[in-house]
Amino acid sequence: MSVKTDHRHLYLQVIDRIKKDIEQGVYKEKEKLPSEFELAKQLGVSRATLREALRVLEEENVIIRRHGVGTFVSSRPMFTSGIEQLSSVTEMIRQAGRKPGTIFLSSSIQKPTEDDIKRFQCNKEEDLLVVERVRTANNEPVVYCIDKVPCKYLPKGIAYENESLLEILHNEANRYIAYAVTHIEPLGYHEKVSPILQCEPETALLVLKQMHFDENDEPILYSIDYFKSDKFSFHVLRKRV
Amino acid sequence: MSVKTDHRHLYLQVIDRIKKDIEQGVYKEKEKLPSEFELAKQLGVSRATLREALRVLEEENVIIRRHGVGTFVSSRPMFTSGIEQLSSVTEMIRQAGRKPGTIFLSSSIQKPTEDDIKRFQCNKEEDLLVVERVRTANNEPVVYCIDKVPCKYLPKGIAYENESLLEILHNEANRYIAYAVTHIEPLGYHEKVSPILQCEPETALLVLKQMHFDENDEPILYSIDYFKSDKFSFHVLRKRV
DNA sequence: TAACATCAGATGTCTGATATCTAAGGTGGG
DNA sequence: CCCACCTTAGATATCAGACATCTGATGTTA
Image (cartoon, rainbow over all chains, first blue to last red; front, side, top):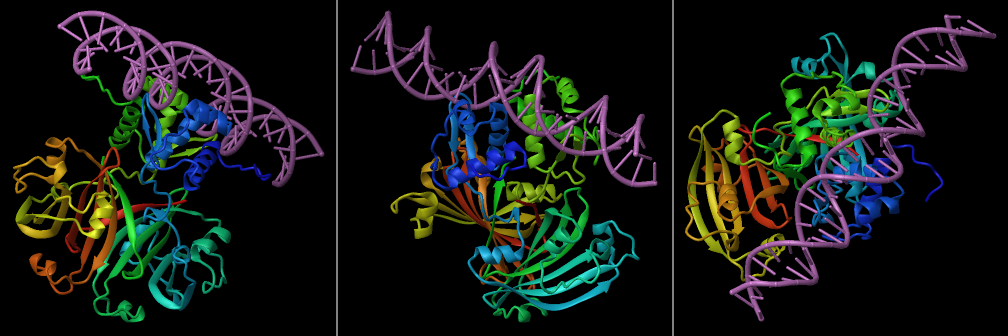
């Protein structure tokens, strides 16, 4: 084990450990895991804690459990990718093995629209910072972004040009974005955006409109991202209920 | 309690019970739930079982737990809707309060393509049933569907025109679709599909390409659905990892 | 008034037990 | 030889009760 102690809850560490073991091939697809008793002993945790971790992994479709039989690695474990996972555009580009970049277009202070007031649960006099950017991969424009965030969440005199907004919110304002509700729309052609992204006429756009919340469910950031569909691909795991 | 005993696992019943209580307003948004000890006593289960249920509910963003403080109803509990939930197109239309219908275009037996072989893990001589349909809402075409399913999963001499494919697979072949991996793409204009759906030139399409699996992770059904974007809206809850 | 100490109550974790399910193997009658 | 039934080992499901640790509130003291 490494020297640095992990202060996160035990069951989370167990989840990560098991995921890592599956990814690294310690347990292969469809293979049976050791029994709960045995696995708990190996990991040095109680069976109850191990079971909480397994319950989450089952929920995430990483493993399959059968009463009286055993626990198996799902034939299609899905850790990564997937639109359900919230990651910054920068991260997506980097994971695709490209060099991320940003072209800064504009930033302004605006009053909220009717929809903004609903979204942020704010009053109509509150100031919003609106930032307009183009994200590039290997210097090629791939995403057009508009971000709106109430000024009260931001420290004054920050250079939005360089850092990621998520990072500024986290580091400077101590607001950690925990999840987002994302609306998905297709767009054939956009008078302003399509030329910016140098889209061929037949290239459609995928629009993600996202309301970001922090751990306390406070609405922090609203963003609209236009993705060039020939450069990005999204997928979702859909479960029957 | 009802007479019929519930043979599903206890923790699943607890999950449903708590969800129902939240939906029916027994516990309101942001409200604190009883302590685990108290709640377990109320529900007549052990604390360990209750905790497994709470762990899943936390994973689904229905509740928020804070060590040493308590368990709270999320301010935005999301049971329903959302693209992560796998439901048939018929169901979507019905939930939107419209009358679902189907226009049957064609069905044929085809040999699998290269991609199909990979998808279904079948050999190149296996027969696939390919069905082509248009789904309507209040008699207006809204979705164009192509479904591919290996013939071996289907009984012979079935009328695909009327029933849902998912239902046929469930009732006749005893194959229950448990989940699907869905790829999302935008499409500006499709030479064949756009006219069928009577799309205005500026109306883009959202394409969902879905590989459906049963409980044993066997690939059963591949479908491509073209949604008119002005009639359908999708959203996803994205969590940070 | 501000920093510190204490305490109640909540979630986190552990231990060890029993209940129930499943697959496999044995056993006997046909 | 085969099939139906029984038994059993081993796995997950659930339980009960204990202790550990964290958090927020309250009280105390310099």
